[in-house]
Image (tube, rainbow, N blue to C red; front, side, top):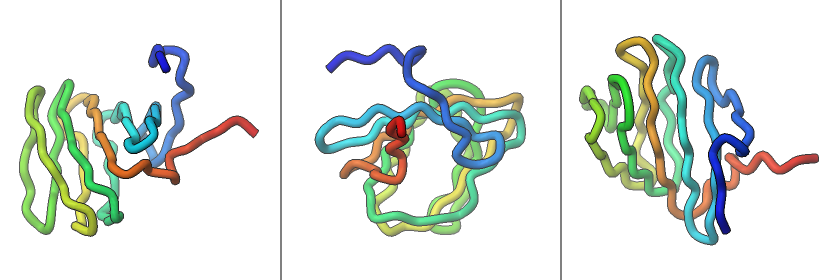
Length: 110
C-alpha cells in the first residue's frame, strides 16, 4: 500500500508534538514534528523503537542517560525501557519505527 504523508492526518499526541502514523502488518512508522521546546514525557512501552533523527536537535534520555541527537543519528530502544525526548532548538523532525504495531497510534476515522 502506498501513502503520501501530506495525505496522512497529523495528531498532536503531546503538547507541541505532532505525529503522522503509517502502519504495516508488523510495524508503526511515526513521523514526528516537534514545536520549539516541546517534549515527550518519560514513559515505556513493550514495543521496540528505532529513533531516526531527520532535522533539528533532540535530547533523548534512555534509561536515565541523556544523548543529543542530530540528523543522521539512529538509536535503538528495546521494549520496556524508560525514555523521554525534548526539542533542543527551533523544532525538529523524527521518524520512530515501532515493532510490533503501536495500536495506541491508530487514529482511524470514526
